[in-house]
Image 1: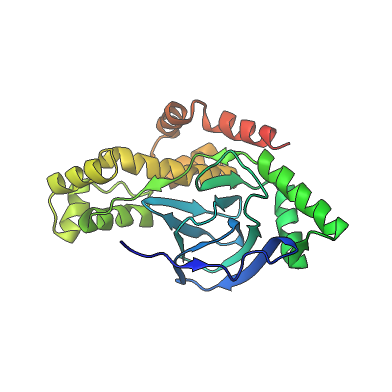
Image 2: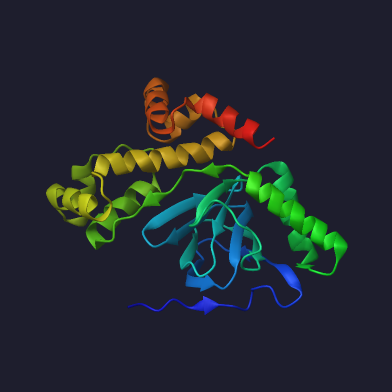
Length: 263
């Protein structure tokens, strides 16, 4: 059984309720698998993080943050430069409805609270101003909408290679046969591995990838037409229908409800 390193150096020290970290990562940098003794909120003020925990993978742009409960093993990859801001909460300080990793929508107020907390460096339990800031951060985190965007990755190496090819460019509608030919594996084998490792067939998985990317682009302000094209749909009507079947609302109605829920 693989041992995951528990990093305690960033956890809040005695007398501190929230510790912080600001770090600038270069393109291609990888943070190896590890865990923390504290609950963690990771947020990038610029750049997109690719975060993995178990078989789950999240793409985290500046409009989102990822809540990672204490002792949860995870690793992070940076395709491009990333300016990361992290908050470490004393274990038990905050109780969210999310018992596992969860993507949260970061509205402007929460963003500024995160940035200000990192600027201060740590929030001490005996400083009334820092306690007030801490409590406001907690209130905003509890109000933040959870975004249902993650992708389950296959574990079988050949199926994983196919999955990574799709993730590299979700807009391309390359046939599965062509993707398989590139790595020398049969379509039947890959389909079997996706059903075994992920629980769904390849095309359903690719649709999930596209919708995950679509949510990122919609929250960033992209139009429905622009987003549909960017995630591989030639007709925006087909994208709207797929989105509606998955999320229970059209892209426009879903993003409007998301913004309303965070006011």
